[in-house]
Figure 1 (spheres, rainbow, N blue to C red):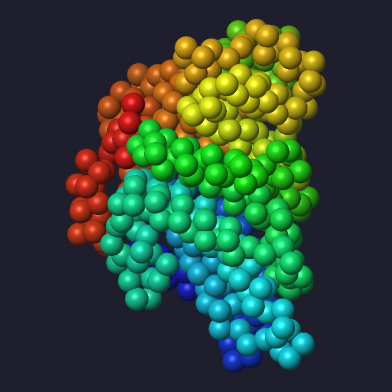
Figure 2 (figure 1 turned 90 degrees about the vertical axis):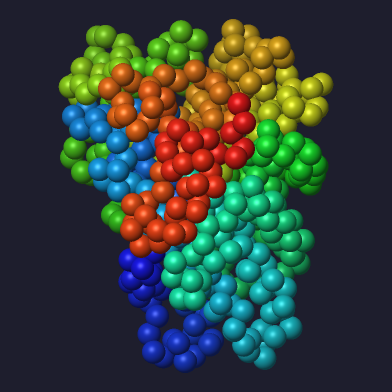
Length: 481
């Protein structure tokens, strides 16, 4: 974590445009710094979720959507060679959480002008709530990746350079409390501040949209603990749905990428702008989609000329020209980066109904699958045909929802990993070439960063012992089956 502190200092100086005058002028600090910090944090959130960089995010490989061509280490679960977990920690703790914490500090300390003073309490409350929602989202992502993680001491690296780890289940409970507080604090009667709103690249300060997002995130938190804390999960999920979650793509939380570097989609950066040919289709999903006549396959992948859709066996390399490539969306610089979208939320609603409101399960399953097909350019008629061939099975709802969520989350692999671990479908098999540390299984967590073992050893060891070992095969507290 000492190295992370240095990164934090560099990150703030490069992205926040802070100088001596800004630090001594609270009005300038407010109008310049918080918006810059929020913009940077949101872009880091999106870049991490969407990048296929093997140094940061290999979950498209883990979920067997993609396969590497030449360097197949990550397809075989070797994540230590590139210190991938170090990057995940740095991105989420330094670039996101700590930049957001700094924005909170600046907003909390800001002294409004005479003309701003009357509306400032509501505006301040809204801004702090939005920032906290982004932190809640990021902490859930970290818990879902590692298990126990630094939490109560994590947002203040100056005071706690070697933070202790908190229990993952306890963190989840606190995140639900925080999202409830944030929802209570969001006030649509506030007019907003242009500088903050322009810094918010997700919703431009639109409070009604943030309320919908917060309810949807609350539902995501609830579903995450459906097997480990079903009572809290049920009450939380049903209250979120009743309050209003995403109901159409217009509610999507996403970052709109631009045509030019450095602001184009990281998919485009790695697949097209790099000039490399590192990724091809994974055989597991290709075969599944062909067998089910899935209309999305032409959007997910390209055909091999004269041969159709061909995926490579997981764990094995292959010639780029001999296999299907990733679809056009990945070679388009402006493809939006998804944070949380309607399709994902529709699958959470379907799962909530399958668990606690079975009478609505079929309809919500159909809604979720249809949302995905429409999202990828399909038609309502294609969705109806697909559903007729792939109906909801109440006797094995985990299989129905698990497999369909896996297909639907093709470009949201972090989310797909959660569905798979929670529902245990589809059945994914590790390649025989996988590293021994994986124990012959598809990983169910990421190991803690090597940097933590070196610099924060006592806290790392305590956390490792508490979860049952710092292994790729150690199940998280919520992964009960």
